[in-house]
Length: 64
Image (cartoon, rainbow, N blue to C red; front, top):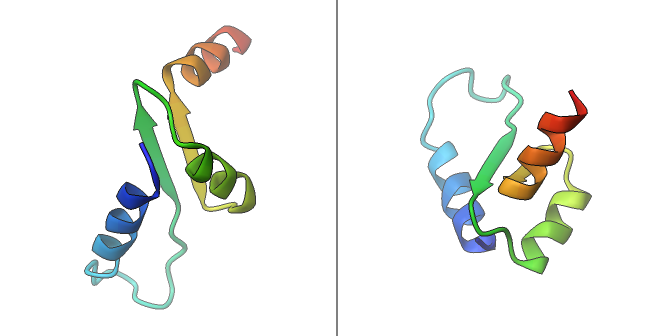
């Protein structure tokens, strides 16, 4: 999964007419097969973006 999906999701979020200018948006992407290096690096830079793949979900599950 790459940045193209994030870009589409961001574009769609602009059509949500709820608390315009007052809401704080966060994005979460889930993938079975993982993410491109570009998207992974972008997520490290952005506080509003979380990525979850099977490996990360398993890791989080065993820590709890």
